[in-house]
Image 1 (cartoon, protein in one colour):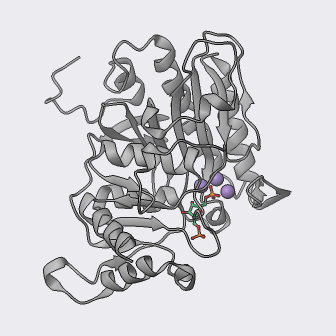
Image 2 (image 1 turned 120 degrees about the horizontal axis):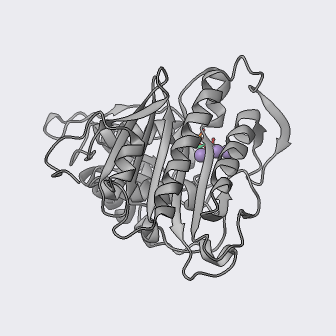
Image 3 (image 1 turned 180 degrees about the vertical axis):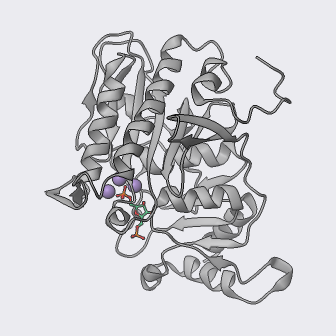
Length: 338
Ligand code: AHG
Ligand code: MN
Ligand code: MN
Ligand code: MN
């Protein structure tokens, strides 16, 4: 492929994948095909999201998912769309999804070596009020070429991910993806031609920022350390850029994307009500931790690195802090020092 110094802005996602710019050294065509399936899924879901109000897929299904949340029609539509696309080419053995209590086995062929973790529709509470939502995904590889997959194949620490990314259905639709060691790249969707074009090559998070993102409504339930950090970011101190601005959309995909591009910190800490916070390790915290570290950022629970955690359950929750190295370090000092 061309020297990396030549900017590739404007290349399509398919071309970028085929040229191995975000492939894996020596990866078989199967991995490339799986990445393309995810690109197709992004196009299918974005077309449904953009017409949700017209296609009668707003509102609730009346069911409750394993999280105890009311399932939105778009949660289900996104989940089914993703499962159908991933199942089509036979490279994905199984999927762990926020919307499925158990694993979904897609292929028992030993040659189906890849596993996908996904939050098919993140930010469900924002669907009906037309605020940005997204899809989160991660790709793991089965430890050995066995037929099918079981839960043990997913109980792997996040640093074993081969790829992670998200699709943000915002003012435009953007797909941001990284494969192990290839940098973080953003592709913006042009609906007039139905293609994703590279728009943000090699995204790097600023060393520090001046925005913090947390649900202040939970402050009565935070631990002492988090409360002290929260007071610190709001003190007047020009030398350290404080007070920080506060931005909280309530969709992880939107809050994390802004933090990745502008720097600063996003936190959904543990609190007295939810001992492990709210966000799920497999398909929210791990993919974002993988992306943030690939972009030069940090991702921790406040006390330990997210990517080192070995999961024990599909839907386990973890406290999640994402952001610029400088800002995550300060947060951790407050949490440790409390
Ligand atoms: P999901 O819609 O996939 O269930 O995720 C919602 C999550 C995440 O998107 C966001 O950061 C968080 O919920 C917001 O929670 P609060 O409304 O409690 O702040
Ligand atoms: Mn949910
Ligand atoms: Mn989510
Ligand atoms: Mn979701």
